[in-house]
Image (tube, rainbow, N blue to C red):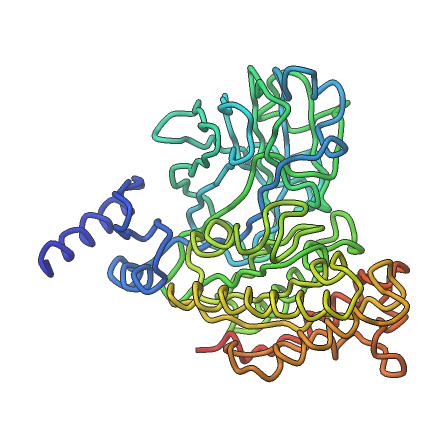
Length: 440
């Protein structure tokens, strides 16, 4: 068995060097597979590197109000004979990249005619222009055209491309036939502008007259090939991590600002912060997107190069629960049980789990006159701080609450809805994460 394992590792290393993608049976681990982080680490050291997520978005079923604007949505489908251009902000860099596309919520197979990756004009997020001559074609199994089956995802072949840390990339798709369904996979809370134009404009420098929308469609991940010490930290969260209240095209959500902090220090520059959050998401029950327990395998455990997880979610569960004392006890117990499950399942894959306390919502519609839901939040936070179940605790509550009225946000950080934070508030969250959690 030891000789066979060594042979698999040697073949995997040779394939990576040659620019090939290996496909293995479930349970086998090469540097590009998901699964056990321990197995990934061993494979990474044997081959001199591994694949690491440097950007991701949580796939969701697109709501009617977030569908592509007309004429890109029709009664029988979307993006018929259309070009879709999107930008993403990467964390760590690398010399080779892979793209991941998701059709997990699609109503039919998704036929993609061609994909290219390029550098955005001016290096900016949310722009429709690319640097002339920078577009590179992306292949899947050696082909530029590919179909993603309904409910599946597709990972591209490795592409030689120098990706610098903390920069933006542009990904352009051309769909000749579109997708013959109005059930579409997207991430509505992109806070990044995307561009749509009829016809094939895959490698065009500019897209004059394009229609815009602040959503990502189909694109769900970007991986870089990096040295063994590079890793990814996933954020499991809701709108407070997805960035409601942040600046469109500003990349100033708290995970973005934490990424900037880590990149600025030599000891943590090899840590990618991967944001797997969505507005309205809940831990226990489906809301906007599947609940956190249901999506844990896809959005955390199956991601490449993950060795840390920050759990910052639960306020939507409390805010949508009943407002009786019995309801408060029930939701508290259920959330604690869910956190226990997340810790157990993540640690089984060699992932450290950091728990973040829930931030205040006093004055928001989630609040109730008797303060019952606030009591549930306090009980949950007490458990997060004192249970000892997490590998570390990040006290977001303390970082942004009003010292004079602890059940409310500090006014300087409040967007006005008494739940979401502005960029300064998100910086306070980012600054509250100890850098020491990412060393060693």
